[in-house]
Image 1 (tube, rainbow, N blue to C red):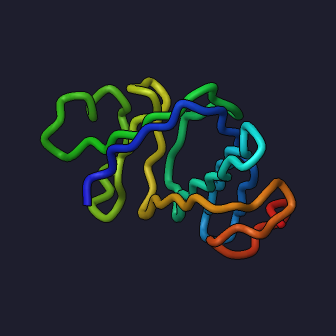
Image 2: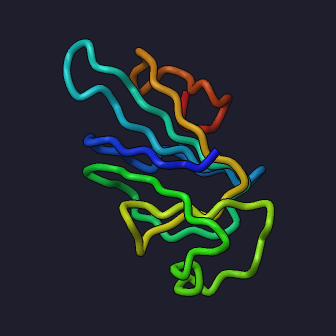
Length: 118
């Protein structure tokens, strides 16, 4: 599956765990009855990110894309290179997924325990 998704809402870096190099971004409900979005990256190898974004768009770029050379990353055939808001921010990780639910800042994440996320 090629990743291409976008949200017009604020996201914050919520947690990072050294074990499995897991990184969780969270977007809290913006209004009453809104939904929370958790965005998880696992087995993060390299990253260039900010701690918060006013909106977030992710697009995976593949091996044939000339933009890959700009990042000067070692080849990692099992990882995905995901541009954040078109670059220059990016995440190189094995896994990326997101989940929307009715949780709040204190509700556990669908992606399991991470200190500070539940």
